[in-house]
Image (cartoon, rainbow, N blue to C red; front, side, top):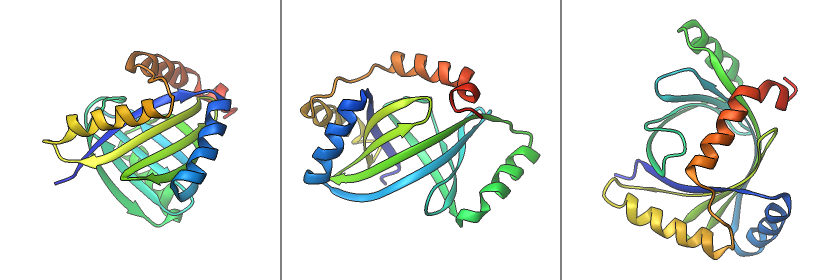
Length: 178
C-alpha cells in the first residue's frame, strides 16, 4: 500500500526558482498551477486545512514536520467549505498556529511529483515527492536525493528547515502582513 509520502525539499534563490521553472516547463508535464491557503493547528499531530484553486481539504501527516517520509491522511471537500472546516476545528478547541499563503507549480517529472513554490514571507522552495510503501521508503528517498542533486540544487538540511520554520511560526503575522 502506497500511503507513505517520501519527499525531499530545498530552499532556492529567486534565480534558481526561475531557472527551474523554465527547465520543468520544457522537460516535465505541468499538472497544475495553484494558490493555496493552509492553516496549521496546534495539535499533537501535524493537522492542517487548506483551500486551493480546486477544493478544500483536511489532512494530517504523522511524524514530525520535515521528516523524510510520513504517513499522510487526506480528506477533500468542495472549496467553499474551508471556513466551515476552520470553524469546526476552532470549536473542537484547536487554534490556528500558522497560516501559509503559497503559489505552487506542480509538475510530473518522470514518475516524480515536483513542486516549485513561493510562500509569502517564507521564500522559494523545490519539493520532489513520491508516494511509496513502508518497505520502499528509504530506497525512494535515495532516488529523490539523486534527482534533486542532478538539478544542481544543494539539499537544505532538516536543521535549517526547522530553524526557518520556527522563525516563520513566531513571525508569520508580520511576515504576511496579517
